[in-house]
Length: 331
Image (cartoon, rainbow, N blue to C red; front, top):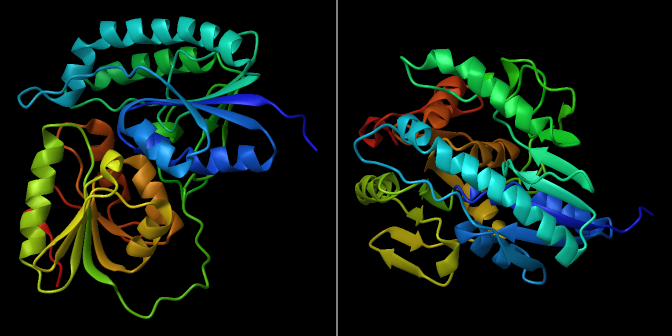
């Protein structure tokens, strides 16, 4: 039996994806007999409280990134880079206090760049060694890659949730530039446990639409999806991605609207949906691939990573890139 450790699992608060993909890691650590302490904030913390009600969850301050309706997201990120760097330094010193207070032996950080410490084992999780830039700023990509590599090299190990071969899901994001020596592919991470021989005779929902992403694009996406679902004659479900409101569920005509579904129900819905509409976030893509389900991928406008992933996966594994919901043919 392995020596029991107190392990801090820290999750970035940009959407639910970083939290969902940490679910199988947390479960494995618990099964191995380790004591897990989770650090998270916002919706990520709400989600993990539902998944692991018995775990201690300590607040982790988010990066506080602001988004704009006028400027592209990549430019907004560049303008806020001093703020991001300040937060990385702040969380680095925060970790020193947490090590003493919670007596942790190891830390696993999902895209929280400042959570390494020379006194304990530190592991970084990312699928994005290459930061995709918009046209006109491509010259920045090698420099950004070097910055990412420098931060990753501070950690003992870097785990990449993808595979090294042709069937990879991240494409250029983790395969174009050389990886640091401490990096290795660990396979796709998904909270779902799907058996290939499990058969389903009919679709429970004709269309399942999953809402995610930053405001104001999130609300716009929700409204557009609702318009699409209202035009369908069959049963549909709209999942709002708001785990803090898990009890909220209503029906409008032929549409079920749910604030959040737990992992078991979410898996059941996805497996039994004829069509799926969602953003092209990487963790959601890994979940769908685990279930061997395709989807219409609608990237968040201006979010270069999602735009790249939707284009890269267009026509692969049942995925189809859709820039506007009006382009979708659900017949």
